Length: 337
Image 1 (cartoon, one colour):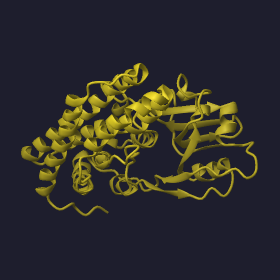
Image 2 (cartoon, helix red, strand yellow):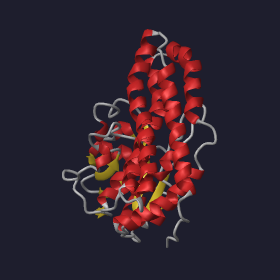
Image 3 (cartoon, helix red, strand yellow):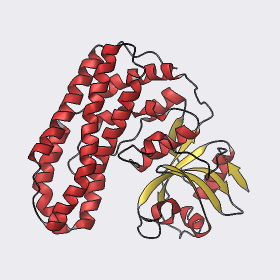
Image 4 (spheres, one colour):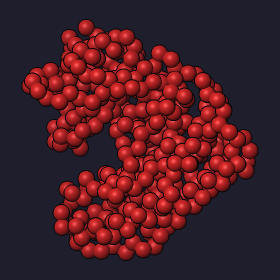
């Protein structure tokens, strides 16, 4: 039996521009990446949903693992996401719901995902998120969105992704139903107007104190511990910190530039472009610093970060101040059905 929620060919799927050069972060995080590629496959503009990236915070040992708001997805595109009760095997749920035209976003182990070949495939057990779109139970083949694209797996990878030989008592996978039967189709200008109204609310959610200042102070204190624990620990730390900061900043800049292209007046557009410039400083800086910090950890030396971190701190503060000014002059968000 084959059930498909989308007619899509893994060999012909072209990635969204956020996942291709000149992007600094070709992969952001697993959840936002699959949302981008799914919306792209549905013919919708993913850049509209990224306003929430401006509001992430430093939580002490990590930056926020940012995701698009389910409310934003519904209001912008008509895509509805809700938690699914996994009371039976995941494969049974997939047959049921993909057959009804719904998709399933689920936890998966990257060990069994061939698109991670060269990193985690058959090397590391890493939790990630995929979106199931096409299941063939006879061929034991799955078509799925993951990270920066759409892929297929089969055979042993199929059996283990769906846990077909799972022992009794194992915890069920966390999964969400993704309904696309009420897709909304809006022209770019209307979508931008709606996204701008949502951005006003996200500006209000930005941290009250500078999270980059808190993060850089924590790094300075934590560097000796990172050096003592070695590179494996450092790479886990870097994913939770520098990658989330840098990739979210890049998406924030892309979102703001997209809005700038549809700004109602040049004055508002200048504010958006200025904030985008500041977020790009954070994005490129974090990308470069991943390697610099890795060398410092490996060599057990203290890098000179004072000027660099001061630039980051100023960039975030400038972005926040400019966006606050923009939001204060923005008209009330329009009613969105």
